[in-house]
Image (cartoon, rainbow, N blue to C red; front, side, top):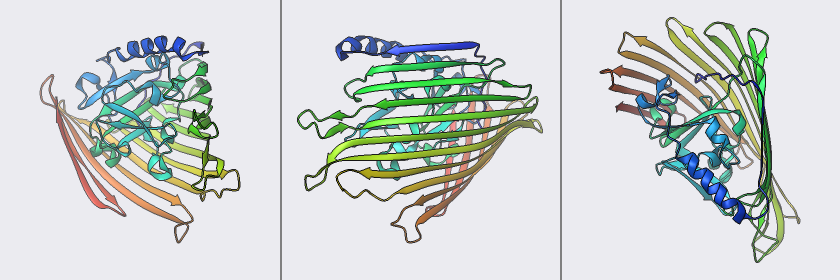
Length: 418
């Protein structure tokens, strides 16, 4: 797992934001806040872990990296992470379909080549499975985020083909030595290009459980009303959405430098809109997405190096409902199970060698398959060397070998200096 830096959260902090009335009253303030947030420079002393799977300063990271702190995120007029990072250079967040759903691409690559991580572990993309579902961006409320690391450029040598465009790593806040938390609520109108009335609430709570255990819990709820067509109110140009998420992370530190963490996430999301069939029959079409993800990770120093192991299982179930007697599409479920890890060790003063592996099985249940479901397995090994050529110049090079049931084998090399 990617290492995380704990921050003390003392006391309870409450943030209440309300948007009311006319968009013309909100627009100047929103534009000013977004402009000010986008202008905040990245702290060159910030430590990032996404670009090499080891800790490096932004200044010496072998990639184009932007770090957005949790404080910055929470000052921006945003519903979720995707809204909060939309002004980041090199990111293109665009609508897909006609219902207001969004995807993100890095440097012009397709959205399926932008990998989303939470604490270094992948969140399965769904837009290629369920069709424009964009579910991977709503797991973590802003109040629970320590920082977001955005790497622009290919990282397939570490993460596979999902990271050909880049990686967005959402790093959550760890528990401190005292119990504390934060609360955020909002109510108002979204900008015209995003939808209609919305309500939102999010909370984060974390603290110690005795001397060796700690717990962090966060949850969020939001509801957005659909936006009807101006000339045909029975039809919606933007879908309605209601989502509730809950995430808990239990951490055990049996000894200094050793940590075991169990994480469980659950989300229930409904989307609906008014539409009509080709025969002109008006009806309301709705989708119910149930998502779960559980993971177990270890992070510790062994033999002079750092070992990180993680296993996780995720499922996403989709069910469609229609009114007016219109037949729904079949139910389907996607699942993913993975085991990954890497070990990094310094070899003298100038080299740091990191080796790792990944094994992943993806499953899709659908009535159109003869057996009811199809599975695909993928295995990978990678090796990376970080070589300090001089006091200010580094060379990072390595390669990853992937073997996939359907697509065969592929080698992804990498070399970067700065």
